[in-house]
Every structure is written in structure tokens, then in C-alpha cells.
Length: 429
Image (cartoon, rainbow, N blue to C red):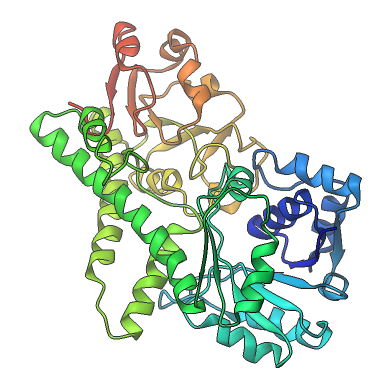
């Protein structure tokens, strides 16, 4: 028989965590403060696009292993473990804002069973375990750090097939109990102190962002010297010390985690007396990459996009998600619109009816060919696989001129050139 678990927050991390723990055989109750969200989830209507998540939610509801309730009290009552999965937005100075996590901890403190364990799943600064302990005000309750390493688009797979499970606790007994929740997962288990566990999360995301900025900088060098970045990164990736992961050039990194976490790590280092200049460089290179891609589009349009129609394929920050937060695509579109471009866009996860404020000023289409009508240049900004298999004869007929900036190096260059397209990628002559 599984454990009784409460999950506070049904956002991206909380919902994935709750559904996967129910799948592992635990009794899980997820709580949120938004009535509409709880009503939708209770009928297996998952509000986010994430492969396999809707199936797991439906499975949990059918089996009775998973429930959704309004307010924390219904999730905390009788729970042996309570996961805190609330947002930690970036403050004005780059630090993580702990207001939501402190509020949640203060709310559940009086409701917890004696000997319950509260688990920080949210990405939190070093020392947050102590902050939660103080907010709980319960000497008979343990607080453990258990950072998440979920990639949007493959979060369910990442939870059920993790590279590692990290548990940070001062109480070894509490650490062992939390480790027991993950029995059956074939992954290394690392038990450490809370500060180290909290740092592992930030250090991991900052390193991945660093790899992306590095390969984008190498792509710029490749363009300058006439090298092909695809061949360069292939040669690099064979080196086991480097590895091939995250060595794909593109329009820059984005999403809800990298920018927030890398700035938070810089702030943590600064407060500890260390000037983490390397992270500043990683951020600067990323900002430069947005501008480099926008400049490629402008150049392909003839040097000026004032009044020019630009077609864009891909608005989400990566494929297989509907997340627009800190999307490189939207940043590049913003720069093009600031220069007077008229942008027509298609994304398979963004319906034409979308009223998201981040899409203001962009003409949305439910068809990739319609988005290309009359365009002087097409920019491919998100790596949706379906873009590779479209009819480019039809694309060329729709466009005013067959010019493409492929910011993901996704398309078949030779096939497009045969069809009369001018195509410019990233890091390729």
C-alpha cells in the first residue's frame, strides 16, 4: 500500500508530481486555490500540453489514487508527506520571491499530522528549507529538499525515468522515508544536506544554459570562418567529457526556468560574496543571439522590414509544449515588430483564438501555409517536427519571395535549395 501524499499547487510541477506519484501507487490529493482549475482537473481536463500527463491524470482519477481539492486543508489532512509545488517568481533584483512558499507553509503548519514530512519541490534559494521550517512553526515536522529536474515536453518520462533523485535533509530518517516514495524507479539516489540539494538544481540549469550559449557562440564563429556547426558539434559530442546533449544551436534559450534560475544563482553567489561573472556572460550571449537571429531575418528581407510581412513558424519556447513564457521566438518577434515588420505566425500548440497578451500584435493562423501568404521571409523559430514534412512547393507559392531563416537548423537544406529557396541557418555557411 502506498503512502498518503498531499501536493500543494497544481501547476506544471505539482500536477506532474501528483499524477506520477499516484501512478507509482500512492494515495495523492492535489490542492489549488483556483476553483475552475480544480473543476477541470477533477474531470481529467488537463490545462497544459505535456505528453502522457492527461493519460496519467485520467488513470489516477479512475483508480481513486488521485484526487483534486480546493484549498490546502483537504490535501494535508492525514497526509504523511506534503509536497510544496508553488511558484517562486523572480524578484526585481533577480532573487527568487518566496512569498508563495512561505504563505503555503504558514497555512498548512497547523494542519499537519505529527511526524509528517514537508517536501520542497519548488526551485528555491539555498537556505529555503530553514525558511519553510520557520513558517511551519512545527518542531515535530521535518522539511526535506527534493528538487525537480523535469523538462517541459518530456516531464512525465523524466519523473518516471530520472537521471537521479536528489534528497536534501538533516534528518537521515526523514531522507529514508522520502526515498521510499521513489521505490521502483531505476535511478541513482543522492542523499545530501539541504543546502547542497538546493544548489544542485540551480547549478544544473545554469550549466545547461551555459552549454546552449556556448554552442550559439561557436555557431557565430562557424559562420565567420566558413565552418559547419553541425559537423563541429558532432565532433565535440563524441568526446565523453563533453557529450552531445544541449549542443544544438538555435535562437537562444528561454522558458520559465533557465532565465529565472541562472539569475537567482547569480544573486545567491553575490549575497555570499562571490561575483559570478561567467553567468553574466551566458546571459549576454543569449541576448546577442536573439538579436543575431532577428538581424538574419532583416537581412533576408532586404535590409529593412518596415511594412514587410514576415512569416513565423513556432511561438512556444520549445516544441511539444504550449508554454510561451520567456520564449526566444516571442523575443525575436518583438524585435522584428519594433522595426516595423508585420508578423504572421503559426504554432501547432497556439490556436488562432488565443487571447494571450504575449501574442498582442501578432496575426495568428491555424494553418502553416496561410501564415506564409505574401511573406517576404519565413522564420522557423521552434523545432516542431511537423515543419520538416510540409509541402515546400506550396510554401514557396504562398510567399512573396522564397526566403527562409531556419533558426533551429531543422529543415532539409538541399531539398529547399532545389526548390529555389534561399535558406540561412545557424552556424552554417
